[in-house]
Image 1 (cartoon, rainbow over the protein chains, first blue to last red):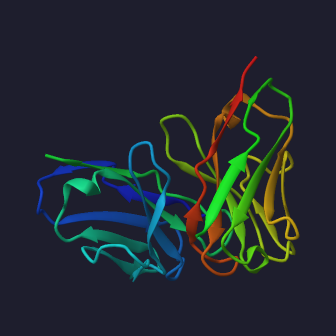
Image 2: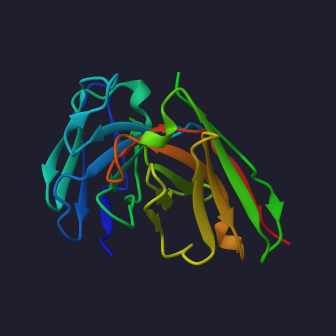
Length: 107
Length: 120
């Protein structure tokens, strides 16, 4: 099975900072990669699909890139409401594995 | 407005069974793949199972294969997860979610989740 590994597992940054989270797949998955945001006590929310397509209603400070085995989620200017855990997920075939999550906090 | 409402979570003994339901509204249910995702207490997300819009395709995580069965009733706009031979490690909040398009899709709408606790 293909494994999804995120790094870092947590980060602390200041408001306005550029934040980058990496997700690596052990085998190529083309662009079948999604990013989700889960705020504390809330339901996961789809941010990006097809590696780089912004879901409707998601602020433009979020962006995604990559293909194959290496993907990134970037928050161009971190805001207080972005405090959350972020997950990547492959969805091309079973198992539709999630990464272990990256917890983002404000410094 | 799209809504997904899970039900059926409960406290059950190891080895027991439970059926979760997810009632949906606000979209043409039969046109979309649906999935179950679980979250162990304080842990990350774990994909569990997926069913295509026509019920022709089902997929399972290895951890539940042979014990869980996903199904849907498109006439009732309801998704199900039959869970048998439950183990302590199945304790989690179970979310249902809607595929963005076909079976190879991200999940764009999520329910609030239902808690399953497996304990004696």
